[in-house]
Length: 347
Ligand code: NAP
Ligand code: ZN
Ligand code: ZN
Image (cartoon, rainbow, N blue to C red):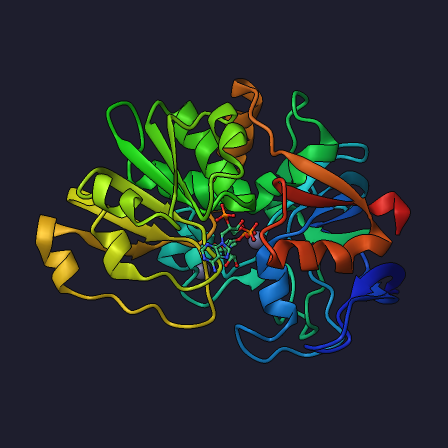
């Protein structure tokens, strides 16, 4: 018998979120029931709920940065126990058979992974996300939260954390590697922290210098304003890796010009509109333009364990559930320091 739980949902692409109830499925043999304590607000929640990435069905509950406590486990569950502190990120299932799933890259499942929200689940229902009091998830897609991480601030690691950790690892950010992070929001601030922890030299490219002190405190070595054209002249040909976290399209010719020989520009930012890539800017310095999507379950656990070991945590602002619409507006104005987290106890 499904359970009715409280949630905040988007009634349509154009209306504010409203408090409502949704149904959670019965706990199956391999399922874990999680009492959600905290849910991070990702810019993807806004893109999705407002239909910017394509049509979805409504009402839709979003939220894919989930931290909570296990309150029930199915009869065949072996990885988690009642009382465990756990997290759920952007995926709740995948085919588990394709070569990418077998390689631990479930985010690139050849049959398509099942998203935590706005995705069709195995039972044919649409998945509903973490702006809610409870969720039922297959144990294989539930992450362990290490003891050293505070449950109240850990949630953003489940999306913002892994989405930046994964490309930094893939493109070998480390000592001697010059990394630029474009945009100091939810993803950007985690990119700075991880790139610094990996030993890379880190420059933040932000619209203004208003967050410079914060960026330097997070581990950046340099901080430049993209509103100043001198930035693009002075930093020409100077980065091995650029991680772009901006939610809007960028003038790519200018940004590609910042890459050094064999440098790579990786977009994790997901603007709804296409970005024009002038190929001549790629010929010069044999540059690459790439994208990256979240990270696999194994790597997400590795990222959580790494964060615990290195004392890395998101900078968060805890909000009450009723303030979620205002928080969304602030995200859209780039007025976020650096991730909103909903205290689900207020829902
Ligand atoms: P966010 O907190 O809003 O951060 C985005 C930052 O980009 C802003 O803080 C701002 O930084 C900068 N920015 C915003 N609008 C801009 C504009 N018009 N021009 C230049 N810079 C601008 O968002 P987020 O949650 O980090 O997400 C960022 C993007 O990543 C979104 O598109 C999201 O959907 C996407 N995403 C992708 C994945 C993936 O798997 N690839 C996963 C999660 C999220 P400054 O104020 O410093 O300039
Ligand atoms: Zn996200
Ligand atoms: Zn697969």
